[in-house]
Structures are given as C-alpha cells and as structure tokens.
Image (cartoon, rainbow, N blue to C red; front, top):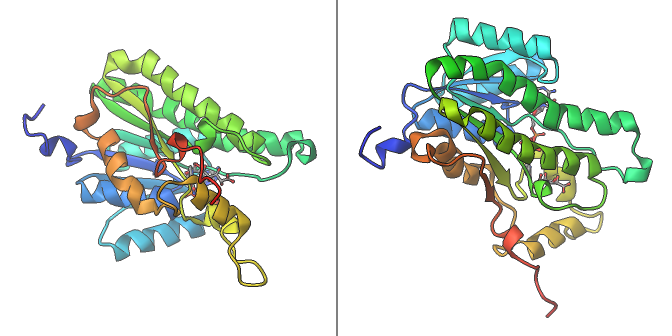
Length: 269
Ligand code: NAP
Ligand code: GCO
C-alpha cells in the first residue's frame, strides 16, 4: 500500500460497476470514480436509459461501458458480470445503487407492490454482490458499496417497503463484511440524506399557489444545513469507500445526510 495518503484515494487502474447509473446518484458517483481514475461500467433497466447515460458520460469526457440489465434477474446479472469480465475486466468496485420507492400507506399497499420494492432495493444487491464476489476473492481484493438511506435507520409514513428493504440492506452490508472480510473485501454502506434527484422530485414540487411543498419545508427543517443535498456531494465519501484509504473500514454505514440523523429538528420560533 502506498505510503502517500493522498494517493490512497486514487482509483487508477480499478474497474467499477455502478448499477442504475444513467442519471441521479449513481451517475454522480460513477463520474467521481472516473475522475479518480477508474474505468466505469454501469447498467440500467432499459436501452434508452443506457443510451442517455452513455451520452451524459461522453459529455463529461468519460468513456463508460453501458449494459442493459434488470438487477432483479439473477440469470441476466450473471450474464452481464461474465460479459463485463470478458469485455472490460474483473470488477474491483461494485456500487449497488439501482433502487425504487413506492410511497403508499401500508394498509393500501399490496403485497406485490411491497415485494417489488424489496426485490430491487434488497434482493438485487444480494444478487449482484453474489455475482461479483468470487472473482474478487480470486483477485485478492474488492469493494462493495451499498446505497442505503435515512430509511435504513428511520421510518416515516408511506414508505414501509422502502424502509424494510433499506434496513435490510444495512444488515446485508454487515453480513457481507462478516463473511468476506477475510478475503480482503470491504463492504460498506453509503447512506444519503435527502438528495435532489428525480426520485425525490415529487417531494419538492411547488404547490398550485406557488408555495413550497410541505415536505420540502419539513426536510429543510430536519436538516441542520437547512437545504436538500446535491448528488455531487456524495462524490468524496463514495470515492473514499471505493479506495485503499478505507481498507480498514468494513461493515460501516457512512451517512452523508447534512446532519439529519444527529438533529431533533428545528425548534418552533
Ligand atoms: P433514481 O433517480 O430513481 O435512479 C435509480 C436508477 O436505478 C434509475 O436509473 C432506475 O431506472 C434504475 N433502476 C430501477 N430499477 C432497476 C432495475 N430493476 N434494474 C436496473 N436498474 C434499475 O434514484 P436516485 O435518487 O438517484 O437513487 C439512487 C439510489 O440512492 C437508490 O437506491 C435510492 O433508493 C438511493 N437513495 C436516494 C436518495 C435521494 O434522496 N434521492 C436518498 C437516499 C438513498 P428507472 O429510471 O427506469 O426507474
Ligand atoms: C422519502 C424519500 C427518501 C429518500 C432517501 C432518504 O420518500 O422519504 O424518497 O426515502 O429518497 O432514501 O435517505
């Protein structure tokens, strides 16, 4: 390991697979990895999203490799990982980013809707991690970063499936650490706070009278910084967890939340 602390953050020569990374948080993380020297591989569920992603990376001067793959389909994931190994190389860094949310009161949610969320947000990280771990063991190292959430720790109305899945993802993270730490594989979680992406756009929509969405005001009052965070603000912590600088960090969830989890919320004036 280099004895230069700044070089420890370099991802030069590494191959990173970021799932669901055509836009949003995955795109911001993959772009940061490219800047840190990694070769970027991403997938998305539809060809049009992959094309959109490839164009967006190219615009930033990044030569990314894009694949169409539904991360809930084990056969398709195994085929994609084999194809990546053949066409790009062995994956050094996996970011389980692809995710969905359904905001439905629990008593109105069908079991099928609940399963769909758990399938993408929890079962898929299991499937993709399982597909990359054997080659990481052979190579002698690996980094797995699971994109967790405030809902890995907190509940709120309408997100029972999402909270169950993201809470489960926190424990999958700790279990991968426990099971494969002996092979020099580090598995950590990155827990974003409330980030401005299409996923959270409905929570920030202006009201018909032009006023701010009540949830927008609620989140700002819950965040010491009093604002939503940008996906780019996850870049530094995500690079840290993918780099040799974090080789002794394993099974940890790094919350990048502007302080939400530390704060009781804004007191009344
Ligand atoms: P997003 O904007 O909805 O992006 C998620 C990406 O994953 C989309 O490209 C989506 O495609 C893709 N995807 C969904 N299902 C898939 C599947 N089965 N196979 C492959 N790709 C699939 O979400 P984001 O806000 O960037 O969030 C990224 C991750 O961060 C998610 O895990 C989310 O839960 C988590 N997160 C978000 C926030 C936030 O405030 N935004 C905070 C904490 C954690 P489609 O466009 O077709 O759905
Ligand atoms: C919600 C939001 C959250 C965020 C994020 C918080 O409806 O409360 O969508 O779940 O996306 O995961 O960290």
